[in-house]
Length: 275
Image (cartoon, rainbow, N blue to C red):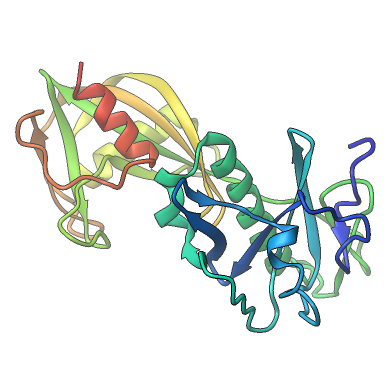
């Protein structure tokens, strides 16, 4: 990261210029500038006055895009900004308002802050950790164990059967929303094995022809969603009753309520059901 600021800062950098961007989080909500062109990250000049006297905790440098530096922090006390048009929004609700680069930066910020908060102490000996200056990592002051940001892989799969798609309603979904089968990868398991296992466990269906489609960072709190398609092989749909309340085959003319635009699941459904 030559010529870039330090990864970890205790105070606002003295050379922060008006065009530096600050991703300020209040719990899981991100401060954005809401205007006629949509939702945008806030610049240092937008919040410089509001930052006076505010305890920011550790300030993380997360990257440089087109000559602009990007920082993130989670305010330790109530952060108030009086300027109209600025508000804290749930990150999930911003997915379809951000472009790919913005969502990537927001994902980095969210996951870095989650990592920072969950690694204050060593998980092995319980001692405090400290930041490494050379990379985004922490080290235990006592046993020297290292802690890097952890990304948890999860699969999401579109199972197809003669032009219809297998969609399921998870008990946690609100508003009768149906989505693709998804789940976390188990230790020692390949992504393809995870696809087959999750589909079988949640719906009782077997699949073949598993093919990679695309992936998406999913900072809720620190996942990487890896998307696949697969072909129905056999079996009757039998929801597990634990996570999945109902599952069925749907054609393009009778699709149920779907996940919000911007999510990988919605993107895959839209593409496959428009072919």
